[in-house]
Image 1 (cartoon, rainbow, N blue to C red):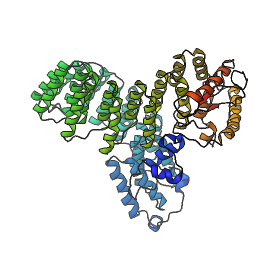
Image 2: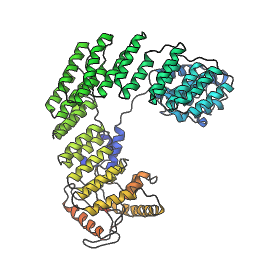
Image 3: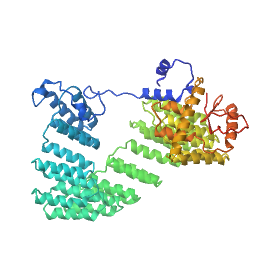
Length: 637
């Protein structure tokens, strides 16, 4: 993928195993498809939300001569439509282009923008929108104030929400019940339901407003979120006392809290309470109870309740059945899975990709890959399109059964069916080859991964490092640390320990201790580290000249640390440079230099592996030099 583009940009004859990491990353970036977007919102992807950016003179005569512009009104309507369709980012882009075209947004437009930002949880932009409205000299109305209160409440920032509430009152606008409901929601999100008592008192005493069903449901949710179920029941009792009748949402919220607390029996008892109050339990109510029993491992109770749903006149949904199948799969009860599948037919519920994937996973885990593949083929015949998760189950199963070549074949299958393999599938296949000791194939998959435009993650690299450890090639495991730097993946403690264990597995305890020492030194930020960093960078510049004549490249070639980021050292670069810094200034350095030179002639990973040291080595074989430091190998293939 993208090879022709590379050939034009880099006209040189090289095999696919001689591509540098940097060129792979460029090809990866170019291979990412760009989706077509509407001309209304294709110019920007993120609003600046800076008051300076909207100070430009309006280029629209309607915007300057009147209070209303037809284009502004139509674009504001479009923003609302996009928000309703679940596309708040696109609504945000419409606003950006409205500004870029020289129009002056109305107060309604800014209110709609606030809604779009709130849905995206971009709460840091709230104050910028408020500032723009103030700088434009607009007078906020109650709708705008309520939108700001809602934004702060959704963020759990009840302090700012209350400040806005007071500003609203100071401007002569009266809050409504919905305003108080929003504030109560904010206290619930902030985990402070006890502070709503004062708010309710303010609602009664000053505003002469009465709580409604929404008020009570928000309060019930706030208490349940904090796992204080008795307080939630007190709210229900108070609701009834003031003449407010609880609804299904009220009872479902408390039933959910009981189920999450491992009290599904109590959740089922609520159904009878609902019936006594002439409230019909719905699909949500029954799913809470059935799924609650599944999570508790009480599958017989869950099945009993499914049969009871018939008497309640509630149709079980696919989510419920999938939960049951998952429960029986985890308990390795095949008969239970068959019973659920029969129930699905009885209720006329058709399985989906999740249903098939769950059953596939059961067979795969049990080691019956033939049956797993059979279920996969049945899914395809049923007209259900497999997703990446279904393919990953197959790949994992083949790896478990020590058939990595079949797992690799899935890449071609996915491509034929227009599916793009993800990082999980690639990493699974890599682990299969690592487990079988075929590290050359594992690296080939890493190469293919980059060609597909999928960036390896921490798990990918740790799998390869583990593989090199199992293959008794710790020097290659250590090389992966710099390759991680090129892909901007920061090694964690577990990564460093894998490298150390790789050295320890061949009996080189000193090398393992060196790696552990490097890990400890990564945490230091004193002046000594800063001085060593400067020395390391000077060494980079010196050694870069030594590499300038080397024209060989490879996908896994270790880049020069100073060439990775010419703008300056990042935290990741600093951490990885520490990995190349000398920690142990013992005679061990001489031994390492000798070993590295020997390996450059004998290692089969490449034709020849030249030595790359963090500081230029002056040592000869068998001679100690104080300038010889820990070495890494660069495979040239």
